[in-house]
Length: 75
Length: 163
Picture 1 (cartoon, each protein chain N blue to C red):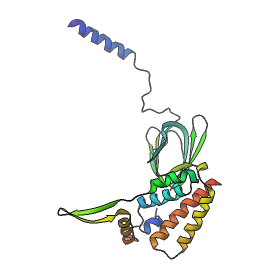
Picture 2 (picture 1 turned 120 degrees about the vertical axis):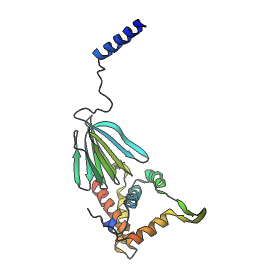
Picture 3 (picture 1 turned 180 degrees about the horizontal axis):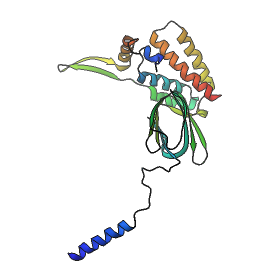
Picture 4 (picture 1 turned 120 degrees about the horizontal axis):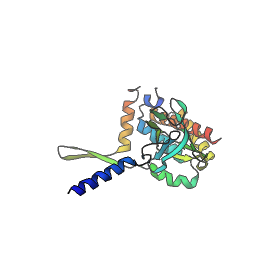
């Protein structure tokens, strides 16, 4: 089962997130406002090496960069 | 000392001759399915006995009844229909996830988002379809186009379900 999104480098996790985002946006306005809050993610991380904290990066941006780099690698 | 032993043996004999006539919690009635339908933020069904569940799996639409063979199915974004014991019929649009049938007629469906059809707005769906079509046909990055295509797949399924 080859998925088009997998060929473009999108991970299953990201696929689920995009589908969920669309479903939330399609709700009637009263439920939509509550639901959209669930979609917010603002996670930052930093790599530690040799006891020193590296640069603080946003997880969303890092994932996006990784997916673009891996596009076309998996089937 | 001896009387205690005799009493204990008598109690055990009594318990053995009247076994507890109960179905254990793990046993489902032979013609029912035990359904658990859960989202990360909400449990729609929690170990509830139902008659039939229709799901939209990637391998095709399927209806799951009691005594179904154990299987794991990836779900397409689509409608899940639950036929309850009382004869009621409930439909939910799920954004995607997995359905697992376990031995003993236990069905677990996990999805990220799921709502009954009346919670959706056909207008919001239409607007999003137009937006997504623009991005998919546009000149953005491959990722943006792939994501727009994912959105279109979900929206088309949702639009068909809302009709």
